[in-house]
Amino acid sequence: MKSALMTLLVTGCAFLSAAPEARAADAPAIATIVDGEAVLIRAAERLRVLEGVRLVPEDIVETGDRTFVRIEFGDRTVVDLGASTRAMLMTTHATVGGAGTPRLLYLLSGSVKITLAPRQEPPFTGFVSAMIDGDELSGTLVVLVDQRGAAVFSESGTQRIGERRGIQRVAEHSLKAGAFYAHAPGAKAAVSARPSAEFLERLPRAFRDTLPLRSAVFASRTVEAKPIDDFTYADVEPWLKAEPVLRREFARRWRSKARDPQFRAALLENQRAHPEWNWVLFPKD
Image (cartoon, rainbow, N blue to C red; front, side):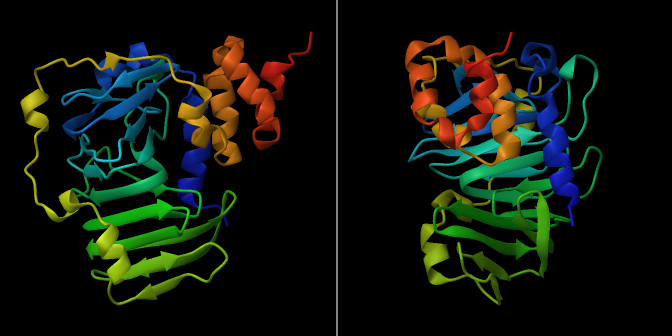
């Protein structure tokens, strides 16, 4: 079966080409805490994340190896990003000019803590990663995704976790408060009554703190992300080699990068990992 989140992932990707300038002012998600270095990739720009920066659908946020970032959404949901995390905000619909509400988090790698607000409109829908997704969320949960697999700890509330195979959800697990889900590549997923010691050791310290909401501090302030150097192939390689539904959209979003000699050379060298770039590299007349 195809989950609702998979439908949102596929349809949400359709808005990658919308002009970010037209929608930035309407964004309800704000980076309210930036402790360390964090990078924002918006369209084909690479920017520095600062406290107070509005985040819009299709923004990619990447944290450094000692960085903590908090994002507060319009419905008062809070998403904390741990160190060495790569995540993208997505939407579920398009509006005139490309404006939209970030409702969905794609976690490529790293750790996030999601604290759900009481259901309001527009709701935060859930999260997606290559191995698992999560919806029907309540309370607080922590998600960790890396080369060792995926893990979810239900700190409070309840969550529905789905195991993914392509765009299909092949299994579902309901987590109650205190439950722990772990899924290593090639192994069967397991749900236990408490998180493992290894998982707890890997959690960012900031995830243990209760911090007040800060979005009101920036409600009347306009904070612009600061431009930094252009991104190289290596900077976005994990995204370029992500799952197909994302790769197709990045080929459209970053097609201008194929004119850069070094970027183009890297694309050609890794062509088998992202064949979606063939139409960009070798356009037909």
